[in-house]
Image 1 (cartoon, rainbow, N blue to C red):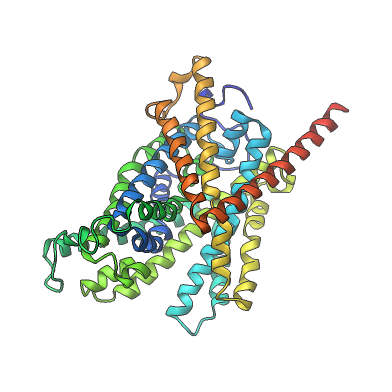
Image 2: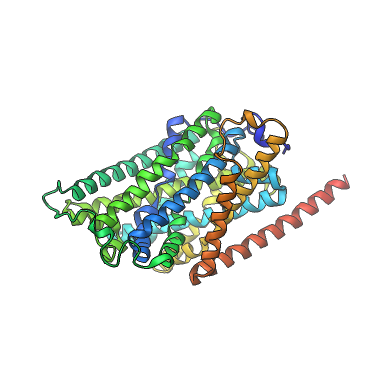
Length: 468
């Protein structure tokens, strides 16, 4: 890695093998899909239950944070696209141990998310179709999406394009129906206008504590957007297309996340039990929309499978990059004729297949265990992104190459410091919440263990090279 990484031309330093076959429309749609996952379809109800209508503030704060992080990540990825993305950039900014630590931490997090998404989709399928065992659905989903990731990045991008299209269509339809209900245009629903925003205890019925608790819930809803940076290495003209995807992230989040949650807390009282367990279905059923439950069940399953598909892509490219940087076995750095790192894909999906057996033996215990295991790794990841960006941007400024960057973080360095401040504030909030504190400490311990291992291996390698 060179000291001028961020200011270098938009070419990846990784060996040839990966194909730049992903189309611009696929990358843009993938960035949309990455910002619309199960966290919105399922997790928003849990946030409303703890914060009331003030969950809008929690979502707004989280949205601002993810927009800043993605802008930083996009700046680095547009200038230097690499399958290791933020891990590669962290290595350039903070050294090999830091870069490889965050790479392995991300890979471990993502392989757990893959298993969790497959389990979640299978659990919903088992409820909708009782005749199909949960383990069988999980196995089916894992086999199909592993196949999608093995046939080539172009076909992967097309599958993810249509997954995202389905989710976006569902959100747009939901927003249209919601606006019609609020405006009193639906004869099947008696609107109360915006009264529910301040009724039942006021706009913030649980106070600042509720907003903080809601923030801890919704912050993880934005995980997955980092796929834009990882996919940059396999995208044609990344300088232009990555920038295009990142620039439109702001209005997507405002419309899809903030808009959807505003509809929810406006149409139904925040105390509604149905809203807490299934917010989209609850709103549509309140409007007597026929087939609402069945349609949303399909949409949620699609959202989970879309996330599984994207996360498998991300995980395989991360371990591929780690292999080329000498931190993983060389076998994971090889590609097939179609440009797919098959060994990396199979390694990344292996744990998911292990959980198929766990779904057979313990179908009701697998998902909660997996979700708790993921913990707060996203906070560590975003912190590394912010710090690495600041180091590399300052380096580019010293070298006089800052003006060549195809995409820049706004208000540098002030908004960058604000981003780190927000992350620090969320960590402090987490320390006062029992469950979040446990996850944070577990993530800290895992990060320290990975860093220690990477340090030892790096020193051994350096020592071995010194004797050659």
